[in-house]
Length: 458
Image (cartoon, rainbow, N blue to C red; front, side, top):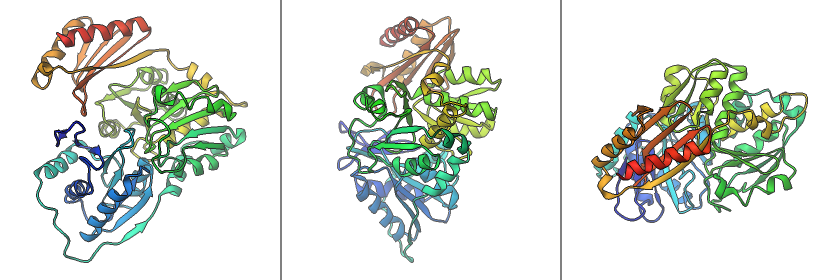
């Protein structure tokens, strides 16, 4: 990860993409320079382009398309598109790679570029490091001298719907015709969600369905941000409420009564649905709730742990032949569809479970059957003395404060003890340390977070 500006809102560049405030650190020129660093290493073939619906996206997309076509590259333009749809189109059209213009859950002033390999997945870390080095090396963007490339419009919606629908028993969902309420957050999610849900036989109520980036609330699908939306679910008479982030790779769930289940429950519910029909290994990242591991144990299959980051989870999924993977932020990765976090497959899997019996099972009842754990997350500002090299010593102090725990340094510091765990991990984007703890009761979680914060401070 690299910070390439010294302003209060720096341009964040990592092995998987770039993100910044549009008009400040992120301009069309910066986007083109990053795209040039990416395509310099691609094989021949078209490049897929999409954007998540933000109002500041079209000028950035236009600049990137102009650069690519001037350089002789054909472009497959998906327009406003969900991030997993870009992965589908890259793979289905045998493209050389893809670029999604999205700042994910960040506020409206942000945008970014996320890179996809020819396999239709987020760029692996090794390839991302090469792109990052090229970008940071600078140098002029050389104009093309040969024939211009062509632009072909292809939204990928039909392919995405087909692939997601193939993962579930459509007939059982159609039998119950559940009413589904969805907040697409004025992002790209409604473009696939509406035809998918209608294909599944659902009655569909969508809010924020226009991909214009005019967010009605802060876009990260957390309980605090969605508080004003939750009463709309029972008001609509819906059986379930779904919330997407602007690029629709994450899903949060709420009950018919408008009770927020959260993002951690999304992956747990999806894993339970898949393992009930297709037992096999699953993969989560090291900050994901232990619910998934307990569910995997119920089904007699292993749960493997990867470092935080979608690309790391996908790497591990491929290594172990996982039937499903994901992250506790509501990102479900189903290799039958695409090796990208996908809110649409998460919706389909949950709806199938709700509709599997002779009567509709409430999502509240499905959630009640999940393992009962308490998770809390907090963050601590890093004092100058414990930034950089000083952080390693701080992590050592935290490990020493938990002598009963088994330490793991896969990603930051994770400490596991019977009935609970703690993850301490520095942020890639801010001078903070994130603390996550989970246990069977709230008191144990609070105690672990307090002990870790005290040891961090020294």
